[in-house]
Length: 232
Ligand SMILES: [Zn+2]
Ligand SMILES: [Zn+2]
Image (cartoon, rainbow, N blue to C red; front, side, top):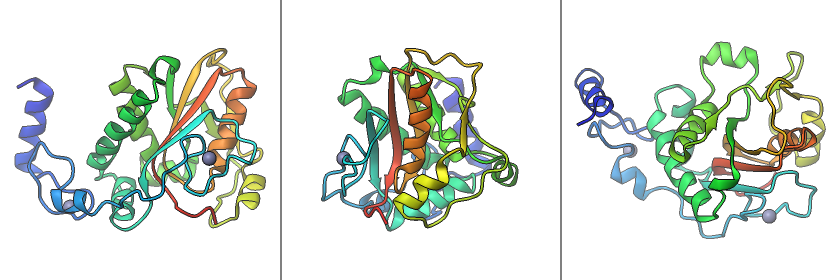
């Protein structure tokens, strides 16, 4: 047993490992309880590998090269994502990081990726919540694929407003000027993988990708735990 695994085992004695979807106590070395795993949404309609949506948005101008989603944002997945946001659902990120890593490997994209990063969170949200769940996912995927994790390539301008429940075109308007790229990080000719927990309209990922491509990133790929079935 290596030290990290031993540590996890020890921690479990004091803080029992819990399923991130139903809070039931699970064995120290599992990520999700089998009952919840069985209830994960079945992907009936294929999620488009290019845009990451079931209802394809590839007719819109997309700046990312490919977008992956592991599951639908439905049922028990919603609970898992809420838990992930509340900081006790790291199992959930680990479970889906593995699935996304395999999807990206199967598409033979690992060699094209140099840097793994995350969709940023606003400073006010970050200070309230203490951590960015998309970053947790990105860190695990970076580790699995043996790539560099860089957390501050993209940031949100301080004066940016929050966007909730907007249509694609409203969102596209709202994300314009919201993000900026850190000029100190050289992404020239680099392949970037951006991670996020949910893809809804795709406008955020598309805007981040546009900025990365503007700074001459060679490839931009996106990895999300869940995709909403509808575009809104
Ligand atoms: Zn469960
Ligand atoms: Zn598509």
